[in-house]
Length: 110
Length: 115
Image (cartoon, rainbow over all chains, first blue to last red; front, side, top):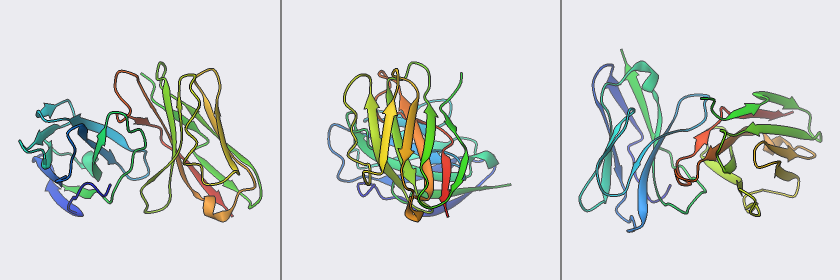
């Protein structure tokens, strides 16, 4: 997604929190921030989304800056099974054609 | 509950043959999407079904590709006269009305190899 910028890769120690940044400086007022991940040889998996408030679910937390130009996905206690490519996208609710950029390859190490 | 299922998981075919790929969406999900993902590439949107509305076929790469969704549930993606460049993972997703289009639940995909 050309609207977002993510680091190409990051390592994380098992059991520690993983903080994945995403820049989306051109986000529009009606666009949400969505996070997906794709574990090797599997289909993408929806994680979480938000508009401007911070969000938390059973998988992760999403922290969005007040100006909405960047966000951070937090995996609170990373496990080896969290090793995947993580994608940050911005999209309005009516956009149904998902488009992923290169994402961040997260490797969780024991 | 059951997620999106796709069959077959792998399909190897010869150039020029027709193939059919099946998708069973999550029960109650009215929207269904087909994408493909080539090796090391991002998602490529193919087609979108929403209830009884006319599908958005704008992503189909050629007239060799077609898809249908019967009874608002199961969908079949058909590729006629397959070419080597059709080799990819074909992904199906579905979403619920309340969740919005971007909370899409994906199946495991069908890996298509055209020899």
